[in-house]
Image 1 (cartoon, rainbow, N blue to C red):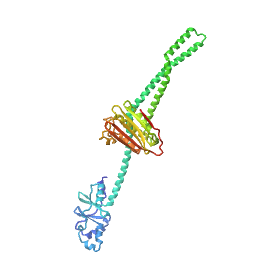
Image 2: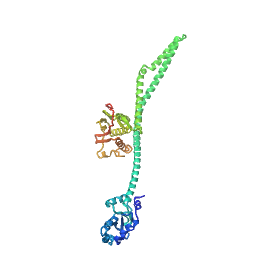
Image 3: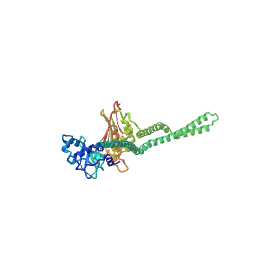
Image 4: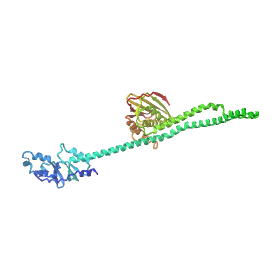
Length: 435
């Protein structure tokens, strides 16, 4: 139902009073039970309202000594309110309520007139208007609550969508990182297969030689043939192959561990259902993000890690992984040829800070205030959604923290993630290294 229709529903039918009706006769109209709910009656010149007379005004005049004798025979226009509150029926409840609250004085002693194109329709009671406004506000509050729930659901979906987009960008790099150790693991296995095939033949030759030596019917020619065959197998196998076996095993074990580490980091990053954890080492989150960002960092970016002593904090590590990965990826993309990214951690006892500073092209001054706006991006079409920094900002805010950025065009940018520390924190060991 429209607000104008609601206003008409509040209307109370009341007959208008002609301007020439005497005051005493109007007093009798207030006694009529049909007008019992009205605080005032309209004065009409034809179908146009020209004033309003209130019950309180009538009582004020007629109850005084000789009031009826003094005012009773006067026309009602002599004592009416010549500037009553008139509301057009086609306006909404909100505007009507605003007009009434601005025009009527406390205590409320008058009703307001409802008109249509300036013509009288009926009377409106302030209490009815307040009740309608209360119902409307309740309905709006319920609608706002539903919209808020939908917004929270959309926000969660947006975060998951952006995380999947980030994962999609990392998949090619992670696949390459996995393929490298996988390649030499496969090569090592093939080399070990060849060695063990040769070793098996050599072992079979040695077994045959022993059988020949133990046989009483063995001739010198058969023994000579066995020895020549065994010598050939020994030469084909080579002593260097046996010496290489420990190195091949070590390299293979290292490659498998590398693949396992990559898969574990990818698994931790992609878990969207991670709840709040009370004992998280931020350095582990940073290392996980650096591992996943390795493909966009290597060959052009020197990463310097300055990890100072930090307490463990309560947070959602999967979400913070996404924040750090976004910052590292943006920093790498800002470096056009070769450069440096500094990742530093620090704590002042109240806040934990993670600083990601690059030596890239920086952020233009006019763009700086917009970088956390949803869908804002300076990247070419198809290379960015404009959601990475926006969602990172929301994630950090949901953790009770903040992200600040400073930049000088041509000299790089510095992002500082600030997170509140929890109670009963456990110090982590300091670490400083370059990679």
